[in-house]
Length: 129
Image 1 (spheres, rainbow, N blue to C red):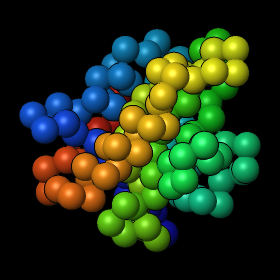
Image 2: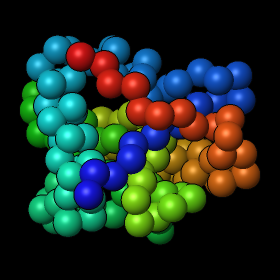
Image 3: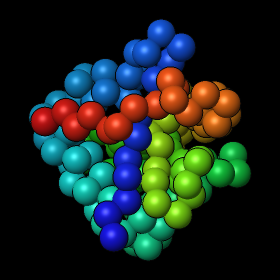
Image 4: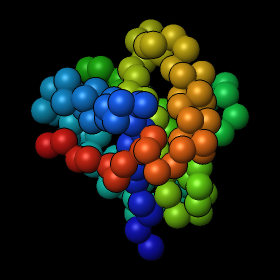
């Protein structure tokens, strides 16, 4: 079963995750896309070191190694937790600390926005190559 991926959009319809991805180097985008493909196929069954929790319940981070440690913030659902993920925020990890420092809290607030307005606060994931 292939799981569905969505990107968070702000109130103006701006796809923040897509723009964050565009700002990555091509090698980083390739690694990100490979991990997102794995996430679509395996969901929560990804190796534990690839998809981990955060200090904020319900917010997950995808761990992508490289010169820059990518840490996209996401959640399962939040509408259908068994068949979808929503990519909420692009983040990186430097020296064991997330940037932005409150990435999980921002992601949690965005998750709440998606729950309140599913039709406008997320779109199908837009892959950036």
